[in-house]
Length: 321
Image (cartoon, rainbow, N blue to C red):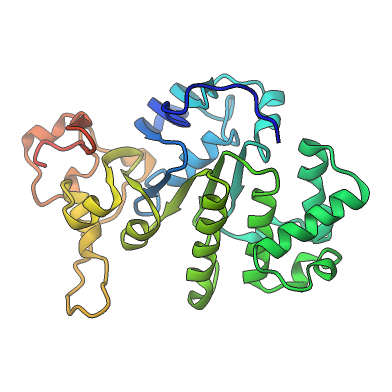
């Protein structure tokens, strides 16, 4: 598929700079900054309420004014997204940016067959019709490991298992060979026995297309396995960014270290150390470092927000890193 000319290959595919998203007077996302290189995978890590899915929805244009207020910048392939008109977003969404939702049962329309739902992006973005569109749909289902693909096109979502529904979602997200795939907790609704299969499938399909991907995850150990870089979020703020292996081996922020202590490694005897307390609600966000009330290194200085400081490949926002 032809792409419009874009920036040089050495520029990031996606860049968020000083990006904030507010609901009313509260910043749900506060000064978020990170980049995604071409052909790279980035993991967004943090507890529920960290802002991971909010970032994903903002990138793909499903959280926009007037529902929310946006500040700062989201640039995708050289195009500023924060002020993009809905008509322009529709040309990106499903075409150059794909999204895999965490619960395919809720995301797939129960009133339409698998074939009808696969046909929609193929018709809208690629202009495929008739036999050509049907053949492309069959190829997409086969590419994500669905057998008897021609028969599955006529099935309704409820006639498929949860794992097969998620594979259909992946096929739909990849239908137009997007440059960026966003996978929002893509295995959270699945049986543990097939979670690894789905993650491996997504990675395989993304890499086969030389595409980039953002994975929204809870599990730091999983992020270390499937991502090139990891962005750690807490209560809407970026607290650490680093290459995945380095972050897992030697986390610098107290919150990242706490997440690391909650990860179990096979073959090692270790006691889990739960993080005390919980992520604050939007109406109870503390001033300064939002993790300070739960942090064993907190001091009076933490009443001021620490900047995200970079020393090359790694960045951390902590007065006591």
